Image 1 (tube, rainbow, N blue to C red):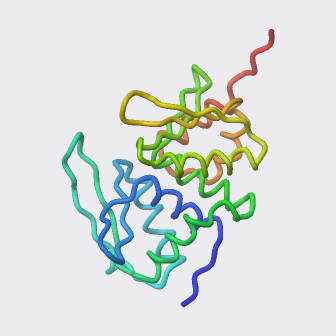
Image 2 (image 1 turned 180 degrees about the vertical axis):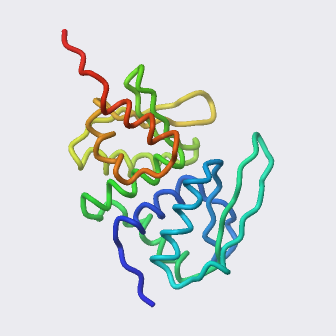
Length: 191
């Protein structure tokens, strides 16, 4: 089966690039606490890849906190996702937004009180951050990026209300959707 690049597979790829779990060959896994996010990952994977529900596994992971890993094993799907992540800059505008929404669902944060919308990366993910920054700016949004403590990098979207409105339709994380809605509905500051 040949897989289609659409906003659903773009979102899955963005989430996987942020919250990937097991690195075993052929495994497509994401780690997250949010049950709605994990269910969306399952539902969209079932719809877009040639797998059935019996292929999915879930396990609890204890580390800094308690999270859950949901995964399936399908080498062609894993290769498709890896290739989509590599070529994400060439996606259509809608697919770029879906990819960035998946990335945001995995490693993003929104603070409507401070009008802040950021995506975080590990210090070894400088190129990932640069590529995502290029994608956001190609969509017409300005960004800033830099270190955030000693172990992370932060990509911040300037004027985040407009970007939040664009990615909100693709976001799946329960708490982050609430934050995006509050940010979008926030009254604009007038000097």
